[in-house]
Length: 405
Ligand code: PLP
Image: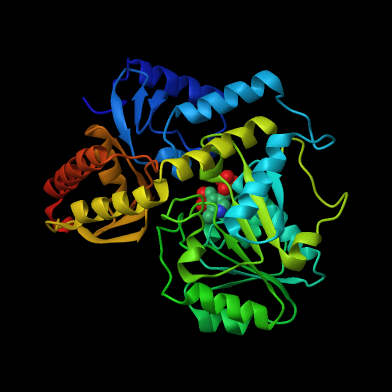
């Protein structure tokens, strides 16, 4: 029986309760999950799945990692929340640690989500005194009004106009278009090193370096949104390291908290001094429990050598899905463990369903792209099980519609 389909079962019952009590902004989620361990999750009827969604590239250490469980337990048992009126040591330690990873002097602002991390970047931009902003078409920076103004996806923006302006969107990966849009009125240009939500789009080599040169020439802040690509996801602490690019502002969230909500805005040089007392804030930002979880994530990535492991696992995954060639797979793109399986037709939703029926969770991020974002801790054995299962699911879809390839 396919995952979650029994109308009289526990999955359907929880889904009905969800529908009755929660707003419909997401549509109805496809499956209730009740437990997770490592790369595996279990639904309300006891069925197990290999989880390559990872809470949308969040669960860097998988589910219920002992280091995160211990850190959260110890911190909540000693000091759970102090607000920004007081100092908690884990908050300071995490900020110091992030700056050390960046290898530069700067300052950090903590919030609770990716959108908020970008809101802070937006406000830093406003405080330069320049009115204009530049972002990329197709880019995703979050759903709050400021982050949405930067987001380059029209369908998400349209219902909420007017949005804070004045933002120019330029084609992603096109350095000339960026050069034409950025000038001395431009406060900041914000880019993702890989566009995750837009279907795992990788820009041409040299694009981020060009963006650095273009922004530096007009005194514009370069903001790199590493919310999906940061914290080891691409096999480096920050994806932009691959091009040796140092941004003025870097935003993080997702994987940083190991499943707990956190956003971080790292600013360097003059940009680090623009937020002054009273200009911005958040009650929960820098919460010591969440910061303790983030420190456990960073410690584990370092101690377990996960950056190298991500690169190896990503290559194994790519190889397994590429060879032998599957007629429905056109291309595998991305970096490390942020991969997009590009299909020969717009059947990603059906592949997602077929994979779920075979006990694999994946995300149809675009009509023709399946996104893979397993935990950084995924094992070779799990990659192999996944590859076999996904290839079988692709063949299931191909059998239904042989013209799809
Ligand atoms: N920026 C990027 C690159 C993202 O991928 C996302 C979420 O997918 C966000 C910002 C928004 O993060 P959040 O959903 O935590 O607000």
